[in-house]
Amino acid sequence: MEEKKFVKFKQDELGIKEYVKHSLGKGRISDVSIEYTPIGEKIIIATNRPGLIIGKKGEKIEELTTVLRKRFNLDNPHIDIKEISSEALDAQLVADSIAIQLERKGSLKFKIIAYKALDSIMKAGALGVELALSGKLPSERAKTWRFQQGYLKKTGDPSKVVEKAMAQARTQMGVIGIKVSILPPNAHIHDQIKVNDALMNVINQNKSAIDEKPVKKTRKKKEASN
Image (cartoon, rainbow, N blue to C red; front, side, top):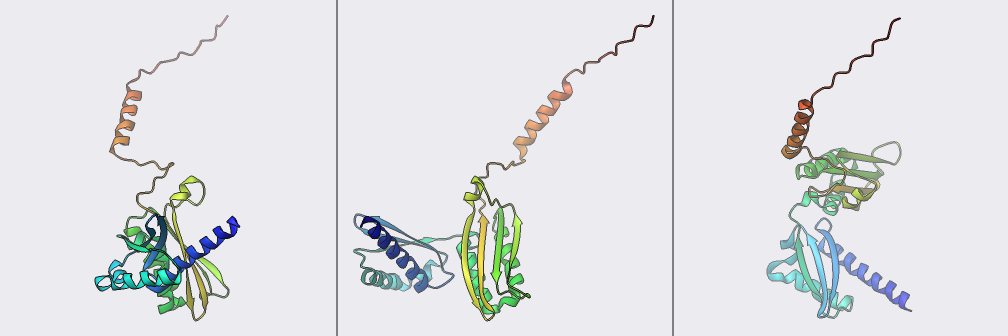
């Protein structure tokens, strides 16, 4: 019984997240998380457009709160808005943006759309990025196109700091799957060596110490001649 309750609880939680994303519009929501407190449910919405989500004098927030309370039987839902300062470094927003552009402009321009997204992400300060577009793209058969730039780990512990997201674009030629992986500027990479002034000073000091050491001359043993 406890397992069934847990599964039902997770299903309801997923339903809330999907409803919030769908109702507020594609390309506006990065993530929806739910925290349970003694006074009610705290729903945190991460977005790059807080003004459109809140509405004039908080009208949209009040409307969404009412719907969540009635539709999902929440006791006391409270919505918090988390503003995303850099849209180009958020993997989910980038994936949704690419999907929207493919749906509007068509899959024929998928390379232009991908390279523009790649350029904006790297200009925002990302250490590395990979875009993967798969499905009915202009080619003889369905395939996956990958666009990469910078440094990006795919395995091991360093890969855990890579932000990943997925989206789908429904075009006239069919459904296109989009995967975005971004290594943020503040990511800590264990095997990365940064060459800065402090490191160069240490190298120069070690080099000077080596140069100052006296060189020992070795004499070859002369063969004794009888």
